[in-house]
Image (cartoon, rainbow, N blue to C red; front, top):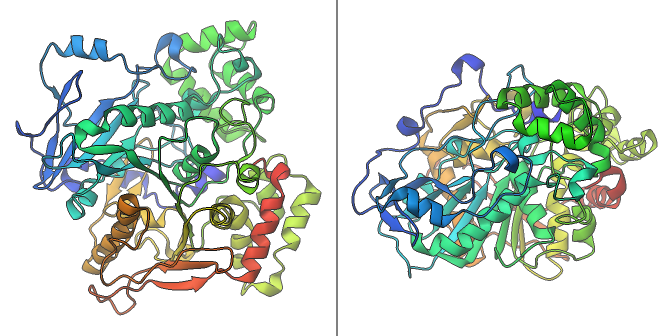
Length: 549
């Protein structure tokens, strides 16, 4: 199943521990100089490096509790925050509670976390202040829209390497708490579709209003995410909302989810409500019951539905006619998206669709796909074009579920803006093994050797000198794009020039370590997207209705 495959990099349950303050940050200390005044409150951050301050758990919305459950978030009541602070400085020196987690499908129960989780972590250079106008990276975490804890993806070392940006990492509601959907939500009296995505929008609006206090430039925001985070930033490109909230996009391993209609999610709601003890009465009665139910009851119910229901069983974004009026691939193809430069790519061997056959995997991943359409997909991947049946299956399931987002997004953007694409080709040394370069492999490198686990946990492993040098190269490319809209402007001297993807030259960079284990040399190089891949991904893009993406 999809959720299970997203945990390829998890370690055994006995090894899953949190040691963020010991492993992520060299030193945690607070000083009088690490105070930011937003105008309604003062926050004291942590000096995590001599040139880096982390402000952790800054609220951007009202707590979505009680009657606010299953509704779009309300803007932060700054008057309330100011009154509760009573003029005192608020310590922002500990990671906040993460949002309630769903099951990974690997035997864990899910349910850890809190509903009061609409916060951001902000990483800034020491002494950054209003007027510095530093470019801003806003990171949206992955996890299938079901799990994920921003504490497992720290950015202190990014600022330490490049103390000329501000980075914001967003917490948003997950699973049923963020993405419960039924037709009745078309009337906001009952609730709101895509509440978790609305959290992300409100976080961007909060950044627009307040990031200048932390030294950032609200007109120079780049949004970035991996997996469900990559899906999120793609959806922000096509969402029917304010598009002046960001000027660039970095989309890593875009999770090409099928966006159900609210009507297609009715069976899910019925089982969810029943398992939570709210199966009786009208929909309004059921919703009232669900809003008063315990987090534990909802967590168990959402886990049961995700694991046992077929079809549209995952709590994820829907085409609601308001925020999302069409499927993202069709909007990209038709030019209905934010006109901003992008970096988009995938790992070499990733796939998020699983099954006993290629057709079965695709039909399970895309519930609206018929047997006939699945057979047409299989025909696009004849065995003669692959070295083994295993590679055939990986590519035939991996391209429709994630990899072809690279071609689809870049092809659309390149018609009117600049696009850079990549193939990440360095395995996670602690998890990938025979899987080649699997999903999430770059996270291990970019975030200090992280392997995420169950219920918001993660474990960090030490990195070799060559791994650290490669991580620096990746971070430099990413932050160069944040600073200038071009990954080359502030790249490392040893890194190759990353040529853009164009309609005439489908170039991309292959990101990998130097094969001679030299820390002062880059192993990355340019290649051209193959004609076969372009043809296959064009076919994938043409099957919008079957995929509902």
